Image (cartoon, rainbow, N blue to C red; front, side, top):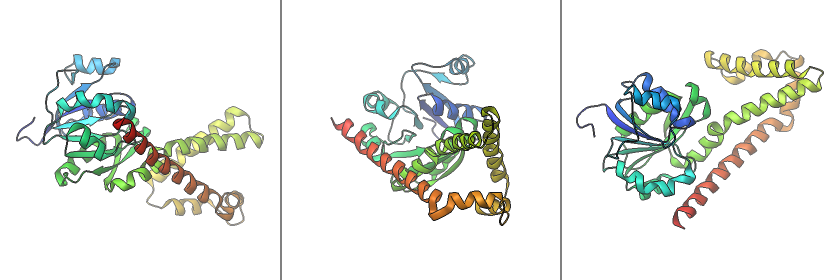
Length: 280
């Protein structure tokens, strides 16, 4: 472990889409991430990971040793069988940060014998540094663990937390699953364009770039989404006519609420299923 230094030694277990995105963010500026060294545990490293190891930027698949921080970026269904091996990286003061969906803090504490555990939920735009991650801390974590967590997760984009773990299913439903809702909106908008007489390529291009541009404007603007929507909506105009349909009887807001509720409910169910599997 790092001893008196403020910089920590981290072990990343799993370097797939999200784990790899985190690693790229850390390597851009180790100090900003609060790290002095990184070890990656990945049975099937890609060419980029191997290159980083060859350049001595990371250590790859070394013998286990107690680390300051262990980041779990493995598939949730594989955690139970991997836990026994993972315990070799964990000591009394190790901070364990999990981005495994549906795996509770309590399960990680019991499986690894760790006290300081963070449950985090990133989303796929984190692969380009445009994501957002919400996180919850175990009771043994304090301000220092929260700060270390935020530094590590900022490589993926914005960070929200610490939150109550009871909120993590809602975080998953809103932002973890949220990109899929946006992509589906693009699909639906393009399909509507085709129905209105546009050819497939034109409809797809218009729908895709409209969402990209609206997101970019939302990111740069100080106005709320409601204010930006109203700025596009002239009384009695074409946008107002469309919004009358989308908002009639609370149509789209109600549908989105039901979608998020369904995702959150499924997240809670998956956590229970995961707990049962670990006990069987």
